[in-house]
Image (cartoon, rainbow, N blue to C red; front, side, top):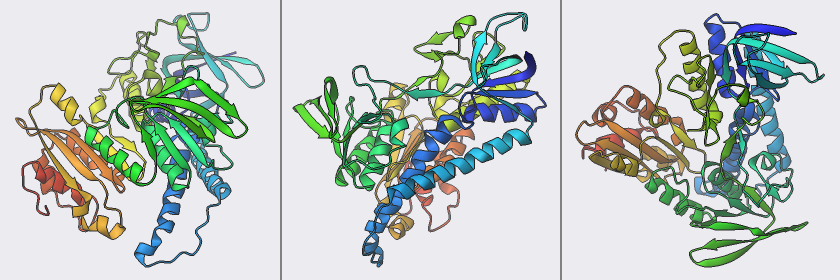
Length: 473
């Protein structure tokens, strides 16, 4: 049995369903093949459940600090079971919303395992999707255009395999029924520091071991230093330049014992749980790419600026192409792919034009080049840094840690990068993204009227500070 469509999307995560909706809006017949649940990693095992837990952790921490606001709470108690129920309810509500969008846009959804087959009686070119349905029936879907959006999974660390009980990935950690008393987080990237912040707020004894010289090494060095300072201030143990010796791992019913090699020597750690947070790898090994001419480099599908693969009717988007593995990046890649296959002229975004957000306490948000990246690219730069302590709204919130840093081109006055660490910065990084899209100068953003008192005022001040014109410094 076969069915033809204008566009078939392999994978129903954020990038996949966004691409499907845009294709339907452009009058295409569309199908999605998804082996699990619509919404993908972001909705079910990533962004949404983790940020829901982070919000509960933030609330718990705020209650413990309420005395400073003149509010006495005699016994703030954590019911982790209810925390998990709230997370599940939010995920399910959003999942229902995605299912509704499929019905609204008349997108056919096939739940099953999809793999690609080469030219056949169904199609003269590769890209036909063979779908194994739950009842083991095989259905062949024939696309005019195929979009691969199969996402990613937690990367494994050789010799330190997750057992789902003591050694966990983020997938298993999200399903914990009880909080551990102590945990070692292997990896101090985005996922690692978010879990460190969350679990610390929940009262867990947290150690982070990061192989490089600093936490979140892809962020600006000033951001890394401030995050490490604040986590340590809260009691998180941070080990950088740290190599976890997988061969020393011993697990038992009581937890794990393993050694970490640092510049200060060998350290033996005893913890109840170990969380592996060493990045993610593409889900492309089971879709039979070898039946196509699609190229894979360093474990990711290679695409051009239009998201086309080496076969021009096959596109790929999201985590499976590497780069910034972010839901909003995948969504825009999906739109780019669809508009290109529809013969339009989509706007292509460079990686430096995509906002990056980290939901620690305090939050981190950035866009553009770090100071070092700008210098490495040969820019003659000017910078500014404005502390949240200068902001009335931050004082009102009782959360005035952090700063905003701006990197600009001294010759052209272009904004090269904006780096923020502080309360709710993820909510207003989009102003910096818009400024970059419109080629605004620091002066133009600084002279934009920012309401008072708001946290967004700091962005205006930091932009003015680039040229020594800040008012409140």
